[in-house]
Length: 176
Image 1 (cartoon, helix red, strand yellow):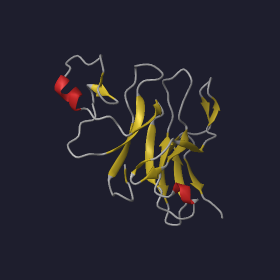
Image 2 (cartoon, helix red, strand yellow):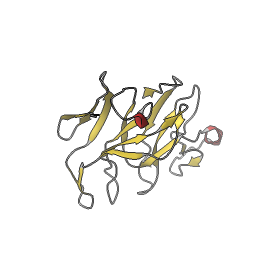
Image 3 (spheres, rainbow, N blue to C red):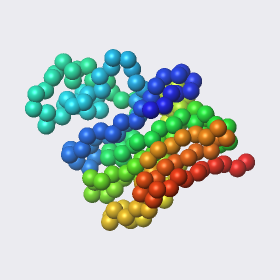
Image 4 (tube, rainbow, N blue to C red):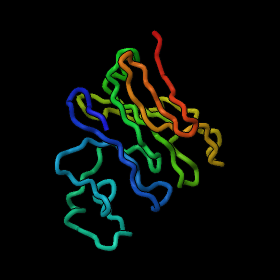
């Protein structure tokens, strides 16, 4: 979770459920609204009922909000930090860095990277883009050289990214 810097609203990344196939259900980035219902366990990504739930509650399914921004299925999006530093190029200002720990339950793995979602006026404004990659060695054989977990923005504007496969903290900085 992190506070979006222009609106001061709370945002979070969410790992969705497993067992519905390689392409369901997308993890997501969303603003946190007071008293809102996001679906668990009855519905996913809006009002899509999870047919595996034995005692469905239709009144809750109808109240389920659609998340703000999909992040891909089984990416295990864990870390979130809005960029409030000044050392990276201007395009990163107030945007969201999201750390994707990586899948364990897909035929071809996904995640294992840090992505960037641009924001404008407190909302996602465009497609996500890869920011830090190279952790996947062979996607067919599930061979990786790291699993990023968390991200923080340092006072000098650098990013620190934790990796729980190698017990490493990666520092990402920008030079002008």
